Image 1 (spheres, one colour):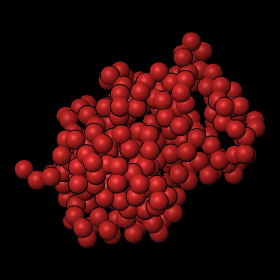
Image 2 (cartoon, helix red, strand yellow; image 1 turned 45 degrees about the vertical axis):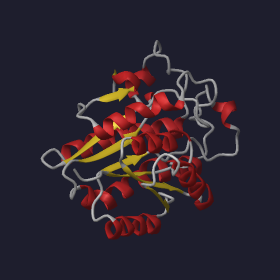
Image 3 (cartoon, helix red, strand yellow; image 1 turned 90 degrees about the horizontal axis):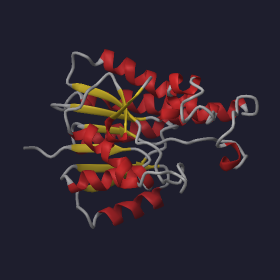
Image 4 (cartoon, helix red, strand yellow; image 1 turned 30 degrees about the vertical axis):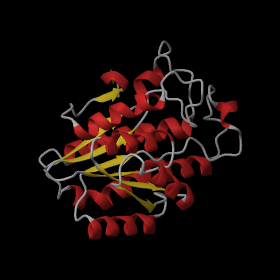
Length: 249
């Protein structure tokens, strides 16, 4: 049986790093990517204690030239790609401290350039990378695209005053995740008759730098569902969070 190869974006810390660790423990070969080369190499050195099948490529998904370079490198080194985990994301690009706006509606205060900056990473970068790597995923016997989203991107939950996330209205981030959900729905239809499957997964509220210490899930628990979606036969066309709880689109 051939070794699977996975590429993870934004994997130098948090969920990306833990997902890489769990995949390595399952004998998957992992290509770790992130914007900061020093942090990326440090993460790789840490993960080499788990498995030698780990490598690093610098990648800022908001920069098309870096996306092209990574696609070329994967093709030259592996000839195909089995798993793409679109984990890289930012919550905001403004100057206001995040805790000050975490629980408030930011639609009237968010600068349009900040919204564009969030979309450049969370949406357009994710889309461009997926398009660039799709030919390599199609060379896999069972390619997987895992798009990390959030309950905050659910339009139904955002419109329901009784939902637990109703009051968390960070417009740039939430709407970018709504777009990631739509991107996945379109990918699922476009890839329906191919060997590649696309999933939207929310790891839940996890104790990362983004989720803060107030979150109720530990990082390994949040990463578990990502690894399961990458390796197991799980349902498509549905939006799941931790422990496979379904979320409305």
